[in-house]
Amino acid sequence: MIMARADRHTRVVGWLKVALPLAALAILSTLFLVARRIDPEAALPYAEVDVEDLAREPRMTAPTYAGLTSDGAALTLSAKEARPVAEGAPAAAAGLRLALDTPDGARTELVAGTAVMDDDTREIVLSGGVVVTTSTGYRLETTEVAAKLDRTGLESRAPVVATGPAGDIRADRMVLSQDNQTPGSYVLVFNGGVQLVYQPGG
Image 1 (tube, rainbow, N blue to C red):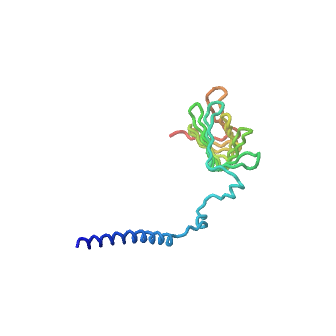
Image 2: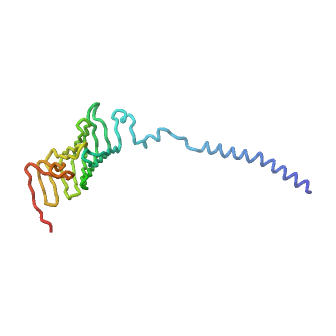
């Protein structure tokens, strides 16, 4: 009786040694047959980068430039995109932000739709709806501003509309530069047909 049980157990174990590996192979084969094949073309619509377009028009995404001017002001530039207009021509940028922190503790920020940077003149020209805000409470709007990269200097090249502590201002020009009479100080000056609507503090 014991011998019969032992023989039966041996036969079952031997059968399982053969059947189990075969079952595993059958399951793996089924997985490979059922698995969906990868279509390389189906992945193309998800690609957001046009390689041929990049080859034709090389560009940088989200570039940032930071440096110090000769008078010690910290200058930071960032853009959504920058690209060379042509060989030997200034680089153009879109969605540009400029921050200028002068040694006297003041901060000036500019936002513009487009900009052109010229390394030869060390100047960047912002256009496309320029908005200038200062830590002293001024907000200016104009169509074009030239900013120096090697020293502190902002100059509008179109009429300016501004609001500030003194009231509403309209002028032909605006210049932000060092105060020649007070080293380490900076002044915001409006020139040319200046109109001021005074608003006394309430």
